[in-house]
Image (cartoon, rainbow, N blue to C red; front, top):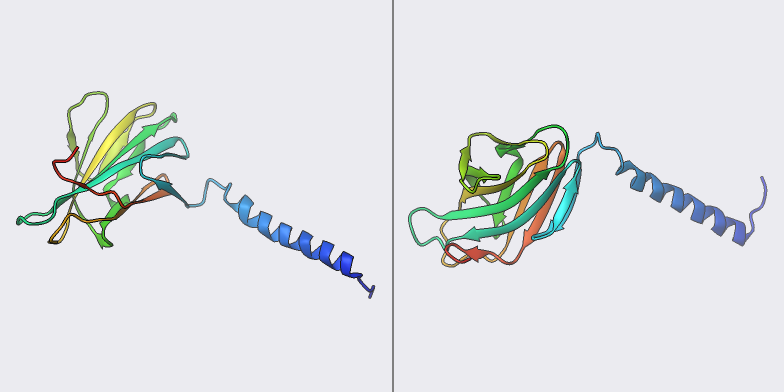
Length: 170
């Protein structure tokens, strides 16, 4: 066995660390795997052929019998195939309490809102604005923080915000 000098040992150790690090970086390039991306509200993230922008979370302070919260986001489909945004693949939370999704509304070129049952189809080459209504538990003030996630074609984008808008506030 050959004796290694300190310099050779450090050089080989650095090469080994680089090789291990590159395998993790390159595995993110595989489109067949489920991947997650984190983004700030208001920023657009590319997810395959789609672009997703989380706009806002709005909530009432819960002093009535029905406590509403809305997640507002947009999806642009820049691909050649239609994609589905499924209700089961949308989640959002207020102050760490997960919302029960009551309805999904959407609109595209027309400014009229329509209601979806289980999924919203985003036609190739088009953009939709999506509003998800959740029901939250009673609280004495408007929630302070929220997070959201949506999965489209096996890719998940997640976002957090500390800027919850009260309902009726622009």
